Image (cartoon, rainbow, N blue to C red; front, side, top):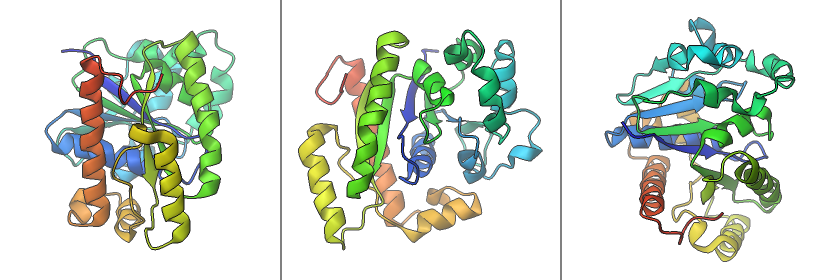
Length: 268
C-alpha cells in the first residue's frame, strides 16, 4: 500500500475551529470510503473525545507511542463508531510528557520513528495543539500538507505568519515535501459585516489557496462535539455538515493536483 497522504490542521491560535475541522474533514474522507486515521496530538484530547472515546478508558494512547516509538502506533490506534475512521488517541498525560521529550536528541522525529511503513489507511489527518509545540513539529515532520483554519475575524489573521514561519522552518530543515495546501475560513457568520469584510480580505490575500467554502457558525457543530459524535450522524442536513463535505472534497482535489505535479494551489 502506498504511503498515506498526511494533512496537518495547524494554527498558532486557539479557538479557530481547528479540532472541529480536523475531525469533520477526517470523517468526510472516511464517509467516501477512504480508510482514514485521525491523529490527536493535543493534550486536551478533544478530537479523541469528539469521536466518542474516553482517553482514560483506553489501554494505550499516543503517550505510550512517544515514550517508546519502537512499539509503533498500532497499540494506540482505536476504531471508532464510524466505518473507515480510526483515531490515534491522545491523553492529557501528553501535557506533562512534552517537557521530558524536549531533552531527547531526536525529539522532532519521535512520531516518525513509530510511523508504519505499510499502514492500513490511505489518509492521515493530524490535530495539533494551538501552541507551536514539539507535537506540532512531530506532525509536520511526517506530513505532506498543511491546512490552516482561520476564524473570520480580523484578530485571527495575526496568528497566520507565526504558523507559516514554523511550516517554513520544518520544510527547510526536516521535511522538504511539506506545503500549505490551503486556508480554511471558519466560524463564518455571513450576517455580520465584520465576518464578510474579513472573508473578502482572505480572498484578496490568499487567492486560490483559500478553500472556497467557508465553515459557518453552526449550533449543530457545538452539539455534535458535546455529544461525542460526528455532525454527519447528528445532523447530516445542517449547513456545517454541507460545508465540511465541500471542504473535504476540495482538499482531496488539491491532493490530486499535488500528485499530478500542479503547483497552482500549493504554497511552498
